[in-house]
Length: 418
Image (tube, rainbow, N blue to C red; front, side, top):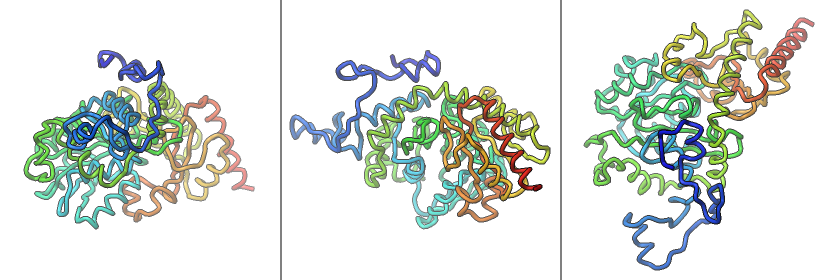
């Protein structure tokens, strides 16, 4: 049933061949580090890319391949590579095409860990230039003859600015540059960046794809349309693979050599999570919208940020690009770090932890955690403030969430005035 004529939730459940051994309704967990073969010639063929099959789980595994096929189908790509974490997937996506002396042009409102990765790439002679504003003209202004890739997130985390994927893809392609999009916060439920012109999509699949905070993982998807020229010398020997050149180079080189592979167990957990992705995202987006409106009306001093608000600078773009869903992350500035901590500590339902995309609501103080190692300037570029709480909204009954935030804020105010 390899059909894209079906709607999102049907594809989640039935889009990939599910005829597994012995009538199983889920792919087995192939918890094997290596795979035996009938003869030496068969294994030789696999190692020389002349035969299909599995040899070693660091390279690939049937359970992991099943997960990759599902993500490829959902994103509309031609191939995926699953990795040990979202950061591993991003590293592989970038370093598969970059070398010393190259430059990256990236959006500024990025997850703090991504900013730190770009900083670490300086040791490899790779420079990142961050735009001052998330619009095509700002990216284009920073392009030089050394630029080799454009990078952005669909919705900045935690800045919550929205990337105009099609416009930036068109601009990048006018300069013969690929666009890599991190689609973690929106998932293919809200938008499929490849369909808007992006060339590579990256996910921290530990988040919404998994949905239960029980497996660290990442995955990258390639669209197969970008034409790699002489500015990407490492890809030249792989052009014989046609549209699969990018994936072939990665699997035969960096990914295989650095060993950042996903475990079969975590791939299986992600497959289970995928089955409810559409239902979860729908509920989480609805809850986020209601909670954001409630918090805005709860205290006139609060600065609540959510792309669903009509006065959000990217509201119209978000509506067009995401189909009137605006993600499941809300941020609120409450006046001071001390007040932020006090409110977080008095909440009874949300967990205080550094993750997003769980079925449960999660709260975090970004400035002291995921952005703690950024400079003040980098924090401001990423939309991080000392008084900000980031809320990853879950699937709880939203009225319970409202009551919980109300009691936490009221209790905090009473404590402050006592």
